Image (cartoon, rainbow, N blue to C red; front, top):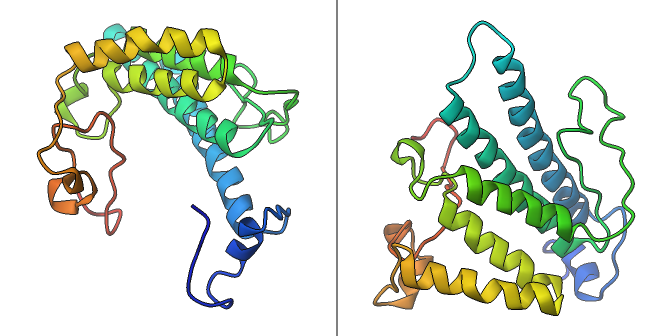
Length: 212
């Protein structure tokens, strides 16, 4: 996946990755590291904001609050899984440790793999989310998306017990989920057929932040 092609002057940082030479000054690696922790931080901020609102004069509707926290935990699990797949022993920063006003709060030990925390986030998302996205918004997490990412975490963990536990979840998605295969595989990679019937969770992109 790291074969960049063209010549040595085109994104030379990729050449180090191709050679398994991982350095702290490689922008591609640094950017990936920052992005997963930015994502986890923003998820934690959402969870904290819901808790703060609950103590105010204008709390979030309890049912919606549960769903918002579940969406945030899905996204935190998503970014934590990305961190685990890219870095051997990433740190896991949850809302209990994170404080937006304390830059030191995210400096937690990275003492080993974080599969347990990732799986806990996806299980919490399964419990709190609905089968369909809130307000019909395409790109929001659903219970099916959380189940699919739970399976992904189990399979990548390498743990035989977790891999075995993933099988009934996969069967549930295939047999009971509202998904079916596209007639042409290429339709899963074309802009014109994005968010199709085969899509369980799809990141939404825009040309500019002003686009709907």
